[in-house]
Image (cartoon, rainbow, N blue to C red; front, side, top):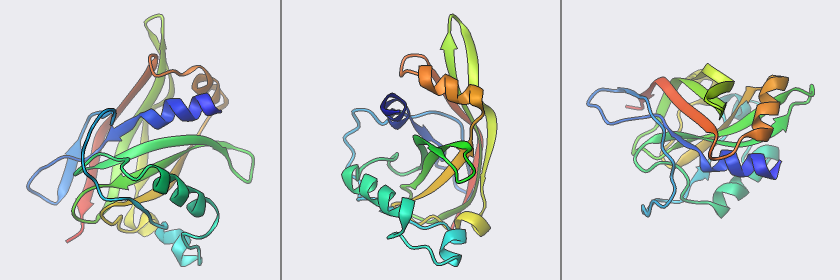
Length: 187
């Protein structure tokens, strides 16, 4: 599990870009290794659906993730939105999921995020996929408006084969990409 966390923790995925309209789009990948960028500390933000159910940043996973952000206050891509894979988790029903953070380092809040996420392992010239262009949708009715310098949690379900692939994934054999990413800036 620590190997998985270390392998996933290194991968920051760039999602946004700079355009003149309110609808943003970008394809790409960004490893935030060795970047010396002055960034404000991140704060944890409760998902809108959780907040509506009385959950606060002092509860459960939010409290744990707040501690992670306090220990790593500069994660995320400066002046952009990024997703950050954290760890393999089990749901109450016993299903496996990957826990991610969506990190907003833009100057404005963002909402209605969509993207296609690919994560795989390359061995001997062949790629086996944990996720192959998996659609991630974070609508405002679920996530709310992600405020500047804030992070939200979200998960993606894993297949048993996906779990096996994560166990053999290393920094060297990992394949990641984001395609068709969009979000809307808060006015």
